[in-house]
Amino acid sequence: MNWLVRSLPMDLTLSACIVFVASAVCVSQVPAILAKARLTEPLIGLGTARLDAVEAYALQGRLIPSSERTEAAADNARTQFVYERDGSSLLVSGGVDPRRSPFRLGLRPALDDAGIGWTVLWLCGQREPPAGWSAVSPPLVQGLAPEQLPSVCARRAAQRSPR
Image (cartoon, rainbow, N blue to C red; front, side):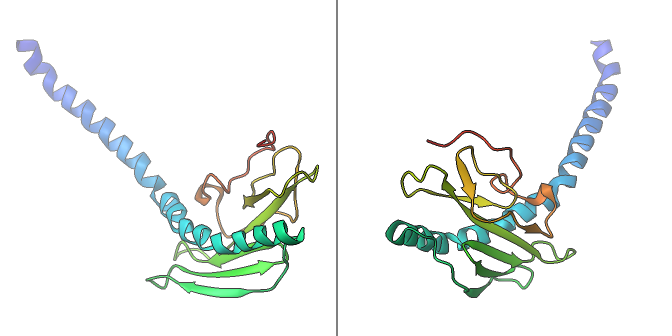
């Protein structure tokens, strides 16, 4: 019992150090996590435009190129997003971090190389198409650090076809 009383301050000190180090590591990740959370809104906001393009592809056999620009203002001025269509790609620009310059992020369609079916894959940011698919435009990411990109937009090597 006497050894327990003597070792208790050492155990508490070690536990406090472990908690402090773990907290410091987590706090350093907060800005990137907040940026990813703020990017959720524009990715969802492009949903209607993606569905319109896929519908046109299914009905007409081509992705509709047009030049549309709409603004969606969020509750606070730091997160205002502008949605554009650039050829077949969809672009969103705005701010996720008040200390950084505005970003631009592209969603681009990828089509099956074999021309089978009417499936359209949407590639976000630096994401590469899977094997057997070709993106119709180059990737676009400006003003966002790699750690700020959601996993669906991060660079990933070409993988096997989803079929």
